[in-house]
Length: 387
Image 1: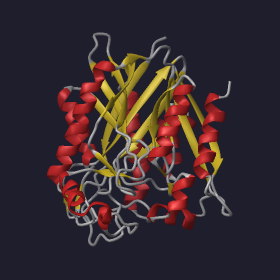
Image 2: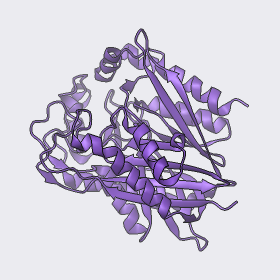
Image 3: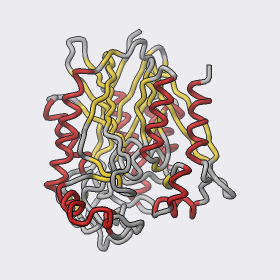
């Protein structure tokens, strides 16, 4: 089978003066640009089938964006609309996209442009999957010593000579090194991680996606100092105080943490194993997550041989990521998970509902059912693993 893979990127940096997303206590609008924002895409084509993934450097996508990206990319390339995954990387230093405005309206076209470039640049490639560890970068913001997921997953495309053409990688960490006091546009640690990989692989492209990490915050030196000073007393359920307050973050810490993640990706690449018969196939299915209210979302999967790229709307907890990876691996699949593939609130596991807190409050206010996470797990089992 002749597999073709292509990578594309498109500048999506907004104009200065736009409102920024991610913190309700932020005052002011974007006054500077620390690093330019991009939409990045990877496309797969083989055996008459095709699929695309596009990830944008914004905090979240408007509700209509995933469908619009799929439709516009389909018009330009022929990739079926249902075979397109659109996601945000969840940087909290990007533009607001919820309210009506020119930038929100333009974003789907910008994302589709990244996919179109990837399609135009596709060529023969071999695909490799692997995992690695990036340790010491995360802290659970809901409980001191709570779970974090330090595993990274990647897909690397290589040419016939073994040169890396591009890397898609996923890691479970909020893009919140920088806090509400930052008014400079940035992809946060994500941009630094991608730059590190690209510097280590001259000419290669990178695409980053955020794995389930609802309660996983960056463990920066300034956070470490505060933890050592205050310990458990620094943990509050108030999104404006304690460990939720990111105002100590610096761009030096952005580079430090992102550099460590990027270096971990580079070190893991040699462990990648070939993906056999990687012709793409895609599946999408609806799941109802509401309690008394109606909340219907769509989950999507791109399957490449025994690899499953699973895309989830909303913010999912580390425990959900662990459960999904274990389930897929037990079913003979090698997983790469994506959160923020469309808008939705936090989706806490049932035991987290019992603990309460900021994330649970938002879920309850939205009308999310307490068994929403379990519904998602069961739907994945039914749709992807039932023989």
